[in-house]
Image 1 (cartoon, rainbow, N blue to C red):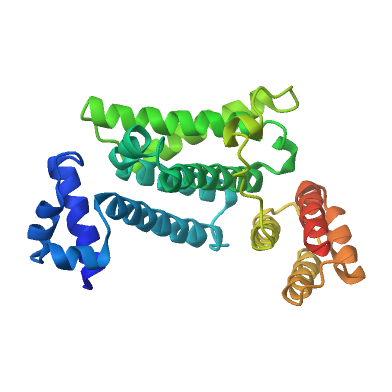
Image 2: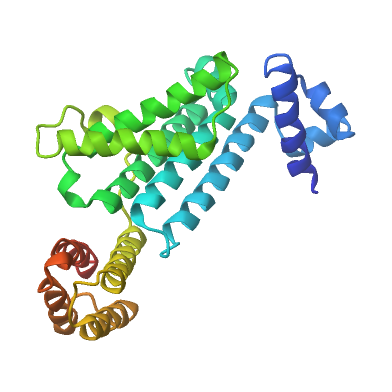
Length: 293
C-alpha cells in the first residue's frame, strides 16, 4: 500500500475511534509508522486528509452507481432500490466527516464548500436518473418531490442507527423506502408539484445534467425490459417478429443510428403490441434525446 493511501486508511480508523477533533497529525503518523515529515510530503494538514477521504468515498460511490446503471439484466425498479441502498450506506459512512466539514470547514473554506455542494448535486442526479428510469418521464414534474422524500428517509435511518444504536438490513431499508416511493408516485402523479430543482440544488449552478451516456443506458435498459416482457407474456403473439425487431433496434443503437428510419419503423412495430406501447413511447423519447446529440 502506498503511503498516501496508508495515511487515508489509518486516518479513517482514528476518526472513528477518537473523533476528528481528537485526532492529531501525530496520531495519524504514529498509526502509519511514519514520521511527520513523511506525512507532510503527502498532505498539507489534517483538512487535506479529510478532503482526500471524502473524495475516496465519492469515487467508490460513483463506481458502484455506474455498475448498477450498466447492469442491464437488472430491472429498473431493482436498480432504483440498489441505488437507494448504495447511497444510504455511503451517507452513513461519511456522516461524521460531512458534519465536521459543514460545521467547521465549509463556511470559511471555498474548497470544502464546493465539495459539499458537488457531492449533494451528484446524489440528487443519481436519484433522478434512477427514478426516471423506473417510472418514466411521466413523473418528471414530481421527481423533485420524490427525491426530497427519499433523501429524508435515508437521513432518518442514519439518525436511528446512530442515536438508537439500531442496525438495519440493507434490503429492509431499500424495500421500505421503495414502498414509500411507489405510494408517493401513485398519489402525486399528475398533481402540481411542491418541490423544484432550484430548492434541492440551490441557486449556485451545481446541477448535474443527464449525460449522453446516461440516455444510452436508459435506452438499453428499456430495450431489455421490452425483451423481457415479450419472453414472459404468454398473451403476446408474433413473439419471433417482435424479438427480431428488438434485435434490429439494438443493432441500430450499437451503430449510433438513433435517427434512422429503420429504428423508427421497428419501435413503431413494437408499439402495435398493446402491452409494449408505454415502453415503445419511452424508447422514442430517449431516442430523440440521443438523436439530437
